[in-house]
Image (tube, rainbow, N blue to C red; front, top):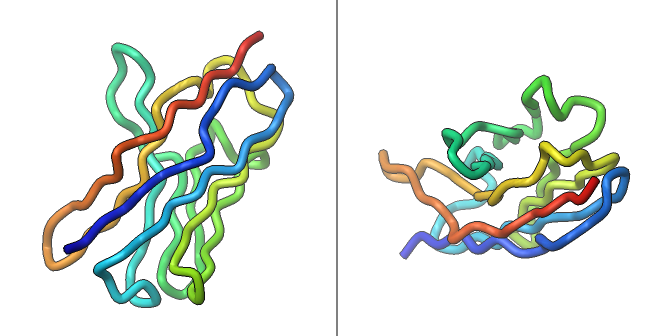
Length: 115
């Protein structure tokens, strides 16, 4: 069964950093693109960053220069390094992929940034 599990969220002051991890199973990891989404209270879930199987990346404008997505094909994990965090980065962060024609989501990890 395809599973994604996020970890690494927490409470941090503005300007601080967190590193989120997404552990995957049930997919051929090297062939998959992996996304990080986030959802703030009362907001739509939005794409934050994407990493393709070849290593190319995309970022939302709001996080460019501050967040870095990376993947470790040996550990089958994807990371989101978040630096210079801002209060409006507060959200539940979700790891996501598409496998066998359907979206797969992790359970989410809460990131709270205090100002």
